[in-house]
Image (cartoon, rainbow, N blue to C red; front, top):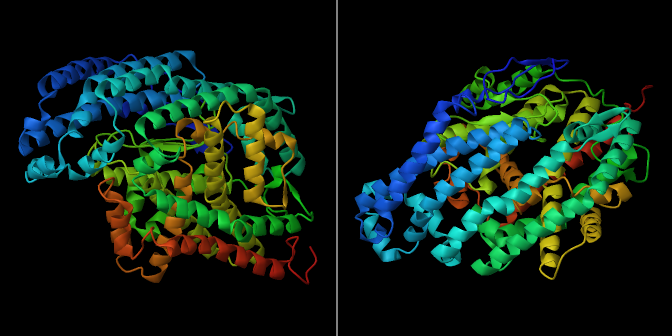
Length: 618
């Protein structure tokens, strides 16, 4: 059947495809529908309660006792919980069908109402940051306030960059007509694009999926179609990129951030020097990682240089079998269960209670994500599942996010969220568990090479590609400070950075110059991307610690996830004997990728460059 998103979020039948029954999420756990009385009541009550909260506490915070201030934060947390539930429902409804104008109107109207309500509450964190350290320390002796110590630590990290109340209020109110509006334009444009392919009009996820098709002619035709469509819209995407980069530059300048990446580092609570060390370590490793791997892959394909559309192509001997949904579910859950029955039990709920939306649909948001919603509800996963092994790994990845969000929910609405650098821990660890479980079952050299090559490509996409993305962002934002950057110049920067990261064995032909246009992170969350590399290297080091000492590791790992945002990366990694500030930390993480490439080179000597076992006829 052709699945459609129910506009009111009510239960829908499971979509049946050649991949087997695919789940569609039920948003009824948040609200019965867009026009439901429950949603209308929550919006009205939230507005009234927020106003009363402001009237009660504005201008009074310094004079409150520790217990009274703890009570005020608890009331503020309850307001955030309700607002979070409302906005989560709007965002998930929109993700199910970005192209529906009625849903788009609902999403924008809801955002504007929540923005207006949150403006009433803006004073609270601004006033908290004006309390002197000594006065706050005295108040923290009260247990009611001490409970929120980690949240206060994070809020007050923004103190040096906080502007006047009036300017903060202006920036907050204008966001719905500024950055958020440009982000919406990007999302709706991407969702509306169609890519001609052999008499069909494909969505962006469907077209991108063909870049890993077995047939080289299919990959090439899809790649050229993608490049042509993106190229026709390059001026629009260039305008969006320039506008948002300028918007960020203005705000960064007013706040006093020294570099475009600095505000992201602050929000991730990771020191600039740690991020700089990560980026430098990965860039220095390009020759021994991505350059070496793609030279190897070019030999497997019998060419000196791979065209860019073969970067993620399956190996020549890969049978490219389809993995039906039920097998993907069983594969991921069994890998989780072997590590921790508790982890698997949480994961099972996502499948049993329809917290996952898996089918590809016209208008549906591309890619994949896990949305935490609020602690009083549960996370939701969005996938565009098409039956490849990479889709199974994506399921393992997003389910890792989901179980992390469930475990961290006990910290409450203000402290459950983790910084991006730590948010990728459980997702990448879940991928690694699943991959290692699959690899352990495989003894045939040809199949092992196929599996390891796929894993290496995923890791290169997570580490090398994301650091290249961060380098691209830095260069675009730096040049934007001197004036508008033409779309053509953005294309040039893109090709230069991609050429540096991917190496000489890949041919980046002209259509590839436009492939920067579709990356949502550049628009939604500038400099988000390095968090993937941070998380992958962190997990590689973490998994090595697991292999060295299984005893008690799962319990310590679950405690790490339960901590949510209450601990920083140094405190979370200390029980495992790891320190991200140590330069050797990144080398250890990158060494895992090097080890896989070493094994691929060894397997190639055993199996042969073309996939045939040496000494045997094909």
